[in-house]
Image 1 (spheres, rainbow, N blue to C red):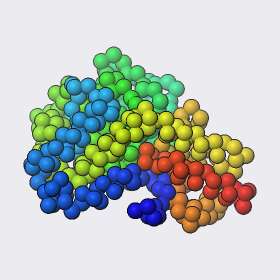
Image 2 (cartoon, rainbow, N blue to C red):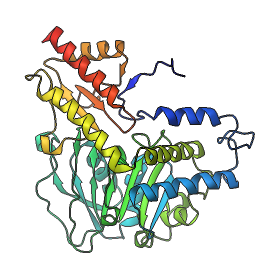
Image 3 (cartoon, rainbow, N blue to C red):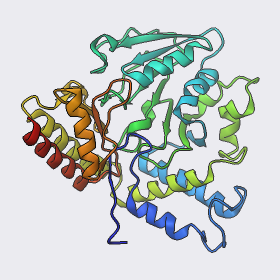
Image 4 (tube, rainbow, N blue to C red):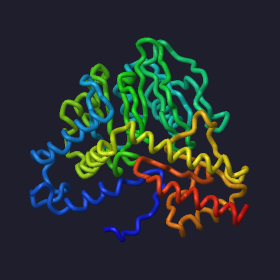
Length: 363
């Protein structure tokens, strides 16, 4: 496959996957571990698939340093379903929950939580166009939990230190778009969740990490597929899970370990981000970043050009140069480069070189 022409993939999700992971999946597609079947065909109750999901869990525990008093679940419905599920499971009747709103997805998470009970914004940066993380929080000491979105995919804003909730208030985090991109201290969190399709695999599976005491909050009358306690007790096998997506996520975890773990991955991610932000900052204003420097995401880099016409031309020319997925979210426009784990330094350099050339021709 040395002559394979691969795109430089800057899509925000589904995002780039490591080439060697795709090659392994390709090699095993028709005959998984000598079964004579694809992993998509074998029973989710078989010993072969049990090994897949158990290995994926063990590798994730190792990668993230997840303590033994946390359960790992591989669920369906994306992070968007988690907006609803966590409120149903973790917020007792009559209680309120606090949300930090620093971008589009945290705003949606709050909106979804409000549909089922009391929830409030402990802070919002909407007035400044979601270009930073809040400097101060108005926290409820009796909140059921404090929720924040660690990395806002659309606005390119990232928390690099966890917000501190009041004593006894659990910290809940949507880490979808920077999942396994750098080390975090899981013990500071009561509950984390991440759609896989940014850094960890294909779409179709969501990783949930729940401290054991959070599972005890689950009400008795929830529908079974919305019940964390039941799903955790079944080892994510209460019904047929998204088996191929879980298999792919497991391969990505193994790939991440081969890179040297999350500290080594973070080092490369910071190098890519510094290269790209440097190209923006040194363009004399031709390219304009969105987030304030202290909150700039390592994963999603939104930027603007002098005119929308130039942005349209940039996207078209980039595609001709095999640079794919650079249009910004439809709600904000502009450009955005998502430089997830599997986006290579080579690909980032190709983008930066293209940006310099485009400015030279159009600046």
